[in-house]
Structures are given as C-alpha cells and as structure tokens.
Length: 312
Ligand code: AHR
Image (tube, rainbow, N blue to C red):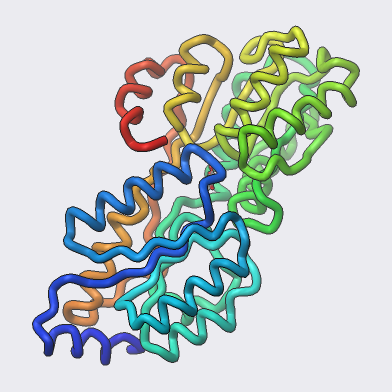
C-alpha cells in the first residue's frame, strides 16, 4: 500500500527506468564483493539507475545513506543491514516517503511492515548444515571445536551460531571450547585463530574449526599452517559462503566443507520490485535462496571455475 502512489506516478510518466539506492555494508569479505558486483550487473542489465553507497561496516553510514536516498526520491532502496537492531526510525521514514525497502542477505529485528520483502538464505539452517557435516565427519572420540563468529550483532552471526548448536545438541562428544568474532574478515580470522591456537596449547587438541564465513576460514588456515599443523586433517574446517578461494583450499586438502550462500540476492529483489512497481504485486515477506553443502568430494576446482569471474 505504501508504494502505490509512487508506482502509479511512475506509470503515469511512462517511466521504465527505475532509480534504486543500494546501501551496502562494505567489502569485508569476498562474498560481499561478489554481491556488489552481481547487484551492479543485474541493475545494468535491467536498465536500473543504481545509486550505490558503501557504509564501511558502520550502521550510522547506512542510516545516512538511506536518508539521502529518501531525499533524492529514489523508487526503491536495497539495504544489506550490518546489524539486526536499530533500524525502526529510518525504515519508518522510508515508509512515510512511500519508498519500498528490500533487505538483502541479512535480517533486521524491526516489524516486517517496515520493509517490502527480504531476500536471503535461512541463516539458522546454514549453521545446521555445517554442524551436521561435522557430526557425520568428525574423528572418533571427543571433538573440541573452535568457532569464528561473524560481525557481532549481525543476523548471520546470531543465526549461524544457533544453527550449529542445534545440530551438535545431544552429541556429547562435540564441544565448542572457544568462540570469538573475526568480523567476517580474512585478517580477523587469522588473528583470532592464532589466539585460539596459543590458548589451546598449540592447537593439537583442537578437532575442528567452524567459521561463520569462508574468508575467516581462509585466514585461519594460514594461521594453522604457520603453527605447524595441517588444516583439513589435523583440524577439520567447515565454513559458509562457497567463495572461489575456499574451493582451491578444498582442492589442496586444506578445507573440508562449505555451505553456499548465493551472491545473487539482487536478481530476486529486482524481480519483486519490478512487479510491485508495475502493478502493486506484493511479494512474500521472505524470498529464500538455497543453502547447498560442498565438500572435497564435489570436484572443488570445477566449482572454483564456475565462480571465479564473479568479482570475489
Ligand atoms: O550476510 C552474509 C555474510 O556477510 C556472508 O556470509 C559474509 O561473507 C559476509 O560478510
């Protein structure tokens, strides 16, 4: 309802090109860079004028960008929210301006009346898939797990932690012994893994690493090698995203499993917006993307080839 005025105005002017503001989190990971690339490509193919804003990981920058998009009178806004809380006011402002907001890849804890739809994966399920892989593939006996969490307060960090715990619940021989944020970055993953290894007496008693994204896993792999251990064997590595570099790590035996998060959130988002702007078709509140598990048995170099040109 809040967009109908804008939709009708667009139709009345015969406008086909839409102007869409995109408040992106930043470029913390290879996956994030790919999402930006794919969003730009999708916009270009559809003749959309995409106004891009990089928030450099700061929520206040995202709020300022959204206010600027509202002032510019864009037709719609894409928001990849860095954290889950603190969006009510600015989303209300967009709603009052009759500008629909589509969430990309992360969730907010605001009322769902304040956005048109959210495109993303089931983040709890991703953690469950990773945890189930470990349950099925861990070595005999006690398994001490270290966890690299994503950005504190972000929905993937919260939900991927929950999902993994759901999966290992009741498996008393699996224990998460250390858990700390690496902020979804490769350097953060390396640094925190170094501290885990030190705190765990060099790391020989660590059975597995669960990283909330591949970039942190890749940083941790480096730290494990520098500590003289063999990632993928001495310490099993399971993570999330399916970026090209994790497939080369898998091909070399350094990583074991990843759960794919497609970087193409913009395609379904633009489809939903185009239908809504055209005739008011209301999309479902959540448009879910798939979460596929890949392991060393899935021809990692073929998977690498499929993804390597996507701007990761
Ligand atoms: O919100 C999705 C997560 O954000 C990706 O898994 C991670 O790589 C990114 O930084």
